Image 1 (tube, rainbow, N blue to C red):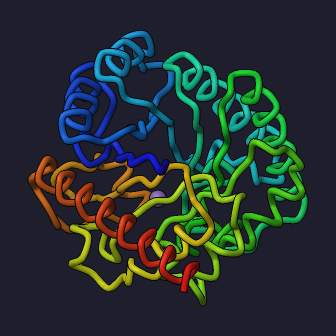
Image 2: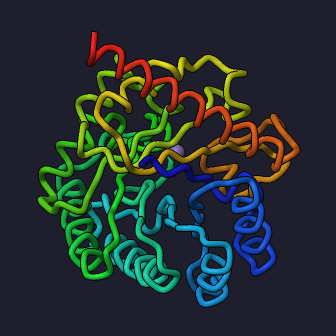
Length: 294
Ligand code: MN
């Protein structure tokens, strides 16, 4: 069964104890299966508190982040790479400490607009660090997800195909492609084809409008993507992601260019998104069943 998740940034701009209570309580009350917890500062994250909340509300959890430029593991500078590797080790420990089963996002380079192509040595550095993190993650039952993001947020992995080639170089079977409809809308030539190409190596799917607001109010054609997910028999996480200046913290806003106030009512947005995703997925499964039995 597909699990429906939601990114914490729908409710909060950080992860204080209060933020954790609000996000986990709201996601559970609305009927989500899991939350995606954004990690900004692993040193100021109360893992036992979050773990207890997840247990209380019977929610599963994964963790996501984007590396900063001084933690860029795709750098040719080994001191920068080591800082990034140390940060990822900390975030992995934190993921294990809350009982999470997924660590993903832009963890293979900085989440940042590069002004040059990736250095070949830098790509090798990134592959080596992701391999180390993946091996350590396996012992905790944690999968690693590499999120293909648009050209303004990475110069290393912009498409599902690039993610697959990177993962081939890593060579660890708990590393998956993480696709996001918002980024696919910019970079993929064929959204359904990208999902088909990833197949059983697709580990996580972000549902995200073209302007990152309410689903169905932007330009993205979600139905062909859900049909493609049904066709590959996708049974992992489909998670809603959205950003608005009303909630998103200023640092993250700067990283992913959130300058507009597209929504204010987090609960309404989240409830609408869950109904939308469930309806699309159920319709897609039904449609693919008809195709298979015609
Ligand atoms: Mn995303």
